[in-house]
Image 1 (tube, rainbow, N blue to C red):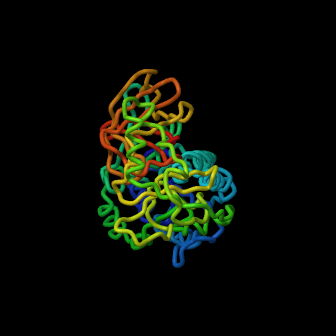
Image 2 (cartoon, helix red, strand yellow):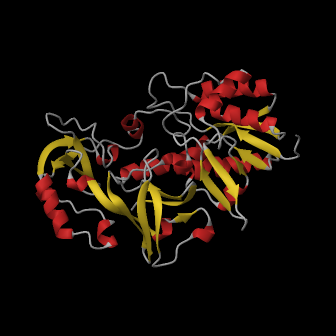
Image 3 (tube, rainbow, N blue to C red):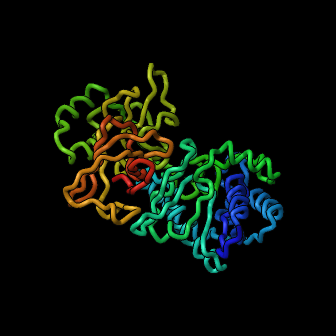
Length: 391
């Protein structure tokens, strides 16, 4: 059935966006596609990884097969200023950024969408595994995909109502296996293409090599804190209030002993267990804390180390983002939600408490590897409600 609405699809050359375009054609939309080039430098790309030229060639083949016009859009300058510079600055500050979340908010559903609308698009579609639904009050919900293993709402958690109002996610109710079957049945050129991994639009990178483009190595101390010293601090703090449980533990060199050196705090993240080159222990060494100011990494042995696990986290007031404005909490209000602070992490039960200074998130169970800069995302059932970067 024909519709008079024009949809422009972000065509990456992969199977997901290709099948999205095919499905929309079947639904009767007027379809065009845009391929985005967002990165030119191959420094840090792992050997054998696909570069943008290969993706573009695949997109051209798919567009030809589907009989749709393909536009080419170079957003490398915008991607560098809005995403890469942010990523470098976050790592340099000892935080753990998520460039894919910012890429969706600032590039795919902002700069890219504006370009699509300049081409006359009524709606913009992508191959994300997520869903959008309009509520009775006119607001738009961001919903988890049917394929839980592929769900990408974590990466879309910073989208707003304006962005969702003109967005289509054709794959929301399909499993990855079903999408591959459709691609093979239709003979799409992307049907056998390997799934892209790594940084959004860049690919799989060797992160230290990539970061060294702009951040110089800065050798410093690695200090190990014993479980006994850690437990002593925790016993002294207690877990009697959200303010305590959501703050970072305190660390100082006199709490432990130096056991090695590192190349610079910017190359590591809390919870990391590989890359320090410290072995010979019965259990793995985990990074507990990164002291950017003094260039010190604090570590502890074993997954059960007390300072590796925290009861809660905190989000500054200015950083709290609600996808639907009607769902915002009032000061002093407390709600129970399902929460994750990493993609693919199983949803965790937590209480959200809004106070004057920001959001306190208290988990039902202790959580491992909470790192400043990561995004905490909360859900109610299948709906993704909001998010914010961890302080």
